[in-house]
Image (cartoon, rainbow, N blue to C red; front, side, top):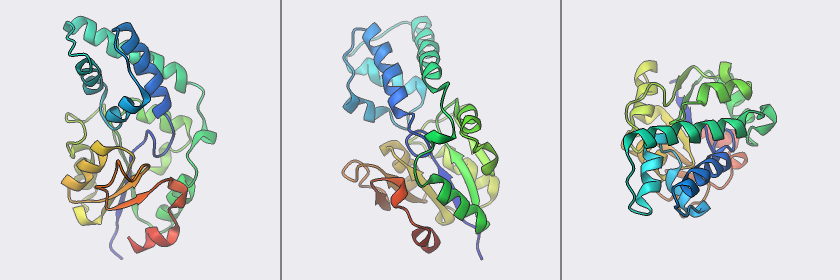
Length: 215
């Protein structure tokens, strides 16, 4: 049997931390006198911290000096960390544990591919850290999604072909990155937004073992 590589995004796929990112970014946007809505937050899904702040600044064609820019990045992360401080295994999205168990039982590879620089800390809080064969996150990548670097690093380290890689994503940038890498992309969320995905599911718990085995 040829080994497959299943790559999971973190925020919005394994755990619903997107709401905390939104609240933290909204706090920063308010400080900059920029209106920031939940709809606009969709543009930041899968995007790293630096590019997220740039996108917020673009909403009002605003520029700030580099020292303020960097201090706001730190402030945003500190606000976010206060929100996620109390998360635990009860916060894992429904269906994730079943899929991880199925993948491991069938001896396929499991990877995390996330822009988050807090990914390892969050995985430990969720008690999932040991499940992954490899973790590629924002602390070791140079290029953010939609660049496919985060997925290609996993693939190359584990010596798997692109067509044998399956990526679970809830963002446009993540789906684009997976498609660019020549991988199978599974969109989790609004199909109208993630229509470029190879397959779409509105919720992760709709993914069955039968579907995974067919991949």
